[in-house]
Length: 532
Image (cartoon, rainbow, N blue to C red; front, side):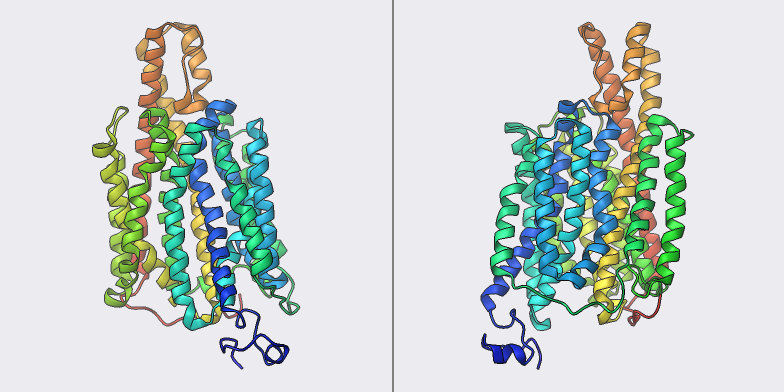
C-alpha cells in the first residue's frame, strides 16, 4: 500500500504500511512550519552577520582577516559537512538529526552573543556551522518524507516563498538590532526562534526510525573534504598577513592538496560515497555544477564586501545597509516562478547563458561607485541588474541539476549542488580577501607617499593596514592628518572593491560560457547513480 494513501490513525493502518505522516494532515502543516523555520534560521544568520561585521570589527578590534574568519568558520563547516549531515539524517532519523542540529545551532548562537574576543567568536561560529550542517539538509528531507509526491510541489513552493520573505526581512531586522542595540543581538535573536523550532519539532513532527544502513557511513569523505576546504581557506585568508612563504600558510596549502587527493581516493573506494563520481561524469550535471561553482563564487565573494563598503566607506547605518540588498531579493522573489518555466519553453542553455551574463553586467555596474556615492544612482542599478540576472539563472539551474539524474539520485544531486554553491562562496571570500589586501596595500602605499605625512604617522598607519576600511589615524593626530588618512583609506578600499566586482563579473561571464559549452538546448536524459 502506498504511503500516500490516507488512512485512519490506528495500529492496523500502520501495520499496512502507512506512516504517522499519512495519518495526520495537521502534522504535515507543522512539518512545513518546522522546515521553513529551520532553513530560515540557518540562511538568515549568514546575511545578518554580514551586516553586523563592521560593528564586530570595531567592537572587538579585529583585523580584516579575523573578520573574514567570523564568516568563513561558519561557512566552512556548513559547506564541508552538508552532505554528511544529510547522510546522517537518512541513517539515524531525520527528526533526530534535525533536533540535534537545532540545539547545537542555538547553543553556539548563545556562545557567539557572549563572546568577548574575536577568537571566541570564531570558535563559536565554527560550532554554529556544524549545527547548520545537520539542520539544513533535514529541512527539505522532512518535507519529502511528510508529503506524498503529488503534494510536494505546492509544499516546496510554500517553503520557497516563505524562505524568500525571511531572507528579505532578516538583514533589516539584523541591521536594526545592531543600530539600536549591539552586535551580540545579531546572534541572540536566534535563540527564541530556535526554542520555538525545538518545541514544534519535538511535539508535532513524528519520529522516523530508518532501518539499519547496509553500508558504512562515509566519515572519511567528510573528514578529507573538511581538511581540503579548510586548508585552502586558511592559506588564502592568512597569506595577505603572513606571506605566501610563511610556514603555516605553506603547511595549510600542502594539507589542502593532500586532503583533496585523499578525498578523491576515499570516494572512489567507498560503497556509498558522499559524492558519486558517476554523476560528475554526466556532461550536463558536471557542467551545471561547474556553472554553480563559478556563478556562486562571484555572488558570495562579491556580496561579502558590499556591506563593508556601504557602512565603512559610504557611511550607511547597519539598518540601511541591510535594506540595500532588499531590491535584489525582491526581484528574485517576484521573477523566480516565471524563470522556473523558461527551461520548458526555451531549453536550459538560453536562460543559463543569459542569466549569468546579465549578472556580470550587474557586478560591473557595482564597480562604478566611488567613496562618496549616492546609493540610488550609484549602487541600486547594479543591485537591480544583478537580481535580474540571478532570477533568470537560479530556478533553471535547479531544474537542470535535478533533471540530469534519475529520480533515485535526486537527493544526492541536490546535496552536491547545494554543497558546491556554498563551497564556492567560502573559497571566493578567501581568494577575494587576498585580492582586496593586495590592491588595498598598493593603493594605500602610494597615497601615503604622495601625502608626505610624518614618518612616524605613516609607519603607524601602515602597521594597521590589515584593518582595511576600519583603519584610522593614530590617536592624537591633527584633524587634517586624520582626514588625509581617512581619504587614503577609503580610496584604497574602493579600489580593492572595484577589483573584486570586476573579478565577480568575470566569474559570472565564465559561468555563461560553461553553460553554452555543456548544456543542451533541451533537457538531457537522466543519468542513474551507478557505481562511483
